[in-house]
Image 1 (spheres, rainbow, N blue to C red):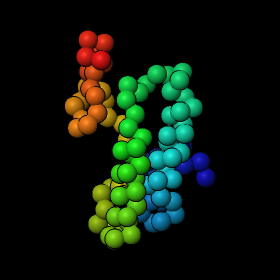
Image 2 (image 1 turned 180 degrees about the horizontal axis):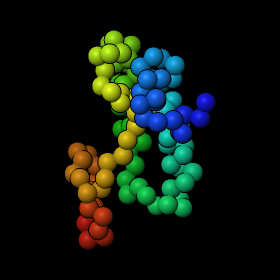
Image 3 (image 1 turned 90 degrees about the vertical axis):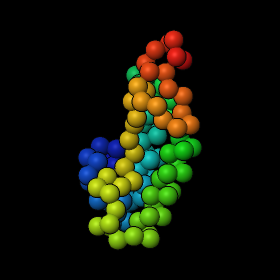
Image 4 (image 1 turned 30 degrees about the vertical axis):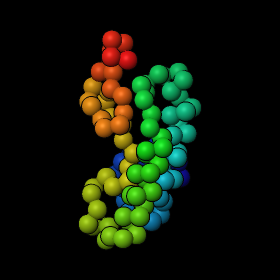
Length: 99
């Protein structure tokens, strides 16, 4: 199974069922980013450490809670547009003036 190609709702189902983990999905995502971002330059900032911490917490929540009590996209990695302020992450608003 190539988890990087699965839809988010399917990834969440697999995470909630224990068939995969949020950490495994994140590591596949980070590997793909490393592979293609050198050509795309799509990421201004990448908080891999923070993402790993959140993925571990998401996996623990799967252990501690019933699947139906978890959010719809629980454990699925996502990006935040650089136009939004994010605590602990530099925001450039897509402009060199703020870089």
